[in-house]
Image 1: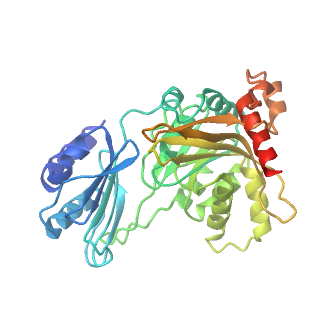
Image 2: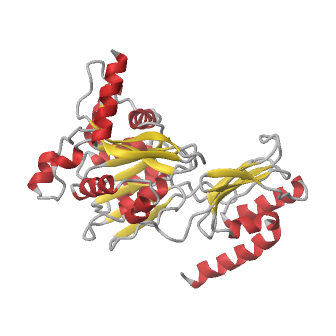
Image 3: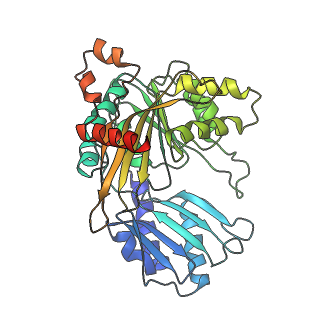
Length: 389
């Protein structure tokens, strides 16, 4: 870390001790992943995927707003009567978002999402029960074969952690360009370049905004082998799809959606949000040509984060012009423990990927038998069919 960054971190830590004193214990607690402040008298924290109400309080609304204004200084933003929304990254890497009154009725609402210093690996996700060993190996196969992937999930579902893992599995001899709205990814690679957007600054109108789309267009001129977009949430979706279709295989991004099918619809909607005149069917065909695999991750109701689907996008639309998605792996819940912990497995569905021949030609140690569902699942399917009849 440079001396400048270290000094800024020290200043931030000193500032936290004062302005954020009521919640500092949670910011320092490694078991807390997010601090949620709903006005001066209501503070929640997230531990292990579950929300807990705390007894922490700010002195009053003015004290809470002072804390937010102090935070705004460190992220290069301004909050006042004309700027009631704050979004940025703190010097320590945490993501911060705030909404001030009168838009927030309970008082200032503030969220601080912490990011751990340790970058997880596949072995960690396997040990945590987030993914099975075979499914992790299959994703490794997809990365080696340069399949374009979208990670889909809700807020706090673990998309960033999974993208860190997948991005770090990219072959070391390839040039990787990473584009983010606010830097969160910690992908380790031999040849990696990080880009971050710049928001418009009311105090410096001479400094124009630099968007994800601007950076993506520039990235294409910088000889990337693969491109990673931390979160696709605007009309840059069209440029990412175009990049995936023009030789940048193995590129990745995340988006907010509840199912693999919904992820494709989301990308389509975002691609059209910039006022493009490309026909809807043409955009859909670009998407199915560009996206090979969608990985769905969810935070389940017991607080655990699990990969629930690894799905292949069919390279043709159905008779109604809609997307066709085949689940290669699917999480099947089998019950719950008395404590409420979900019991289930991420299992193969029996559907072979269309690129099975590529796997075999490259002599990858992942035979067809790996896609055979377990016996209990086949028996369960038979029972369901019998009951339905």
